[in-house]
Image (cartoon, rainbow, N blue to C red; front, top):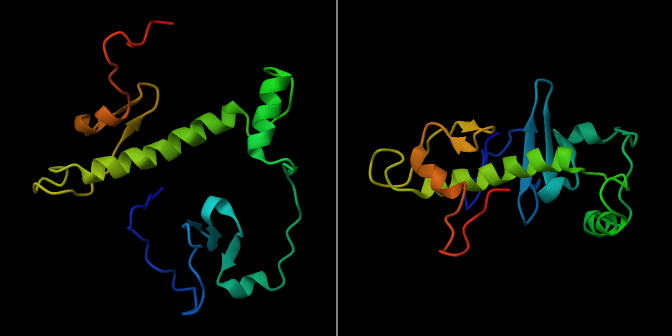
Length: 160
């Protein structure tokens, strides 16, 4: 994954025409595979193959059930139903690791903004290596300050 945010943008795909939008006003996603590229707007909306001419005769069958009430309401309904009593479109077994990857993107941005990461006294890029089982960055200890917070006196975490 290459995460770009805060004004950082990927190179414009050569498959896009000069008038073709890259993502939407809120960002987007580009998946690069061995057989081509797929681009979507923010949150994966409006997915399309590149070059866009590949979309002309494309007919994709729906394989996964949609969430007619939306993910937020489904979450509330699952809370009301009780743990394990409702099938979810994004159970914690999936959404937990997914959320971890998104939060790592935010952590990477914070690390990018740290002075001295590039060794030149200004913000810079550095590949971060994440150890999920230990919940820490293994090659830039300074970035671990963004993984867990320190608590004020009296609000420390207790052992569960």
